[in-house]
Image 1 (cartoon, one colour):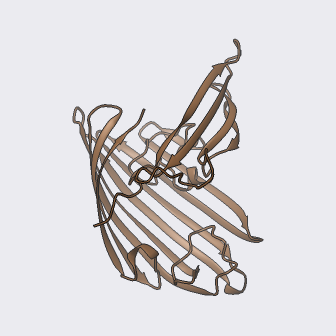
Image 2 (cartoon, rainbow, N blue to C red):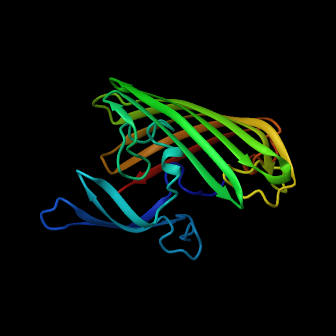
Length: 269
C-alpha cells in the first residue's frame, strides 16, 4: 500500500483557454495556459515552471486547421502515444486537440494512422515510426499499433526498440459503465541503462551511460469507469507488469513482476 499518488489516467491540471473571432474571416485567435500539479502536495509537476504544459497563442479555422506558437506539451507525444490507437481511453476519431492529429485516414468505423520522426539528442540521431488504427463496431472499439525506434549511443552502439499494443473498449449504449482491456509489449535491444541498471526511455540522453541491456517488458491492464455525467466519473483499474531478460525498471524495486491496483475519481470542467 502507498500514499495517494499522481492521478492514474490523467495528471491534475488547471488553466485558461480562449477563442476570439477575427471579424468575418472565419479565422479565430486562440490561446491556452495550462499547468499540471500534484494533488497530494499541491506542488507544480515541474518545479519553478508555472505553465509547464501549455503556454501558446495561435489561429484556427474550419477551412485551414490550427496553427499554434509557444510552449506545447510534448508535441511528439501526440502521434507517438496517439489516442487513436495507443490505448482505449481516448477518442476514436482524429481531432485538432492534444492527443490527436489529422494526418489519418478516417473511414467512419475504421481509422488508420502513422508517423515518422527523427531527433538529435546530445549530438546523436534518434529515429522512430509507428503505424496503427482502430475499428469500431457497435459498442466495441478495437485498437492496434506497432512502434519502431532506433538510437545512436556512441561507444555503446546502436539501440533498437520494437513495441506493439492491442486493446479494446466496450461502451454499452444507455449504460453509465464502460470497460477497457489491453496489452502492450516493448522489446529493447542494446538499450543504455542508468547507474541502477534500469533501461533508459526512448529519446533519453545516454551520454553518461556505460552499460546496456537487452530484454522486454509486457503489461496487461484493465479498467472500468462509472460516469455520473459528462463531467465526473469514478474508476477501478489494475495492471500486471512482467520484465524479461535484462530489462529493469525502478518502480519494481528489483523484482521481475508487479501488480498495481487503483481506484479514483476524475472531474473535468
